[in-house]
Amino acid sequence: MKYITLIFALGILAGCDRNDSGDAESSATGASNAPADNPSVFLAAKGDVPLLPETLEMLPAQLALDRLGYSSGVLDGNAHQQFEMALKGFQKANNLAESGALDAATQAALAKANVGPPTRLVRIPVAFAGQTFFADFPKDAADQAKLPTLGYRNLMEALAERFHTTPETLVALNSPKTQIGAGKVIVVPNLPDQAAPSSEVAERGWGETLISLGVAADQPEVDSILVDKSDGWLRALDEEGKIIAQFPVTTGSSHDPLPIGKWTVKGVARNPEFHYNPELFWDVSDSKGKQLLPPGPNSPVGVVWIDLSKPHYGIHGTGEPATIGRTESHGCVRLTNWDAARVAGMVRPGTKVVFQK
Image (cartoon, rainbow, N blue to C red):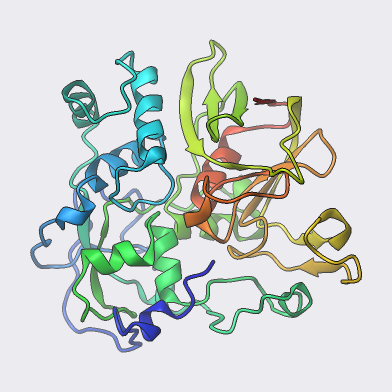
């Protein structure tokens, strides 16, 4: 991710390790699926939630779509192409006119979902703020291989991932003088906390990863995955071909085009190590040595690798969520970490995957 020391360099949302005094209330109705004694729960804080800035006018719709499984990538409040496509996916799945606009019928359908207000006031958990950060995150793979984990650079980056947004959006939701740190109170998009998953899917710290991304362990099982190169979207389909969920993706490049065809899921590696082989990257010198990179959200494949029957190809996360749909990849299908985690919960070995033009 490229949000290096934003909070310090720009003097906004300054970090602070000191705990605030004062009581935190329980989470708002519908805002949490996790037990209150979970140390990573963002409990609701006392106080009035500020009005949504005009610059983030599309955030309520983006948030509702995200919570319903129709992601527009990062929640940034802007009416961009990815937001339009998320609306079209939701409209198609709900038998509405596919206008790509937030028309009255679409607003009414989103309102029926009753996902609650677009933002909430929370207190940053001590455990969340106390994770290990890597302010001097190296660019070179050989140096990355020396780290214990490819974790976040700072608390701002971690908060942005937890609430599916960007540091800039968090700044816009809060005062420039707002401090972040253990016990500090901030305004965030209203994404609920999640309960720890069952032991079957909690291996390699996957339960903690899901909680840190605000992603539920319980996802609908899909019949097939369709990746469309023409519009840059991944769609999860049921047996009748109906869209269950939809996510923006980055798909290949002129050097490493998306392998058009029919494939299957071979398996899912959660919090995987990454075998870095320069010979597989056209833009990396073959003189660079192979490296085994530790897992972490800033891994080249993010928090999950969905292995496909096409050798060396997979569906995976990324350490740069704001680039999804805006930059090229090395042939694989890349999503935000939170969307990749959701897809990982939807597929099984043998799930059909179609890459089409």
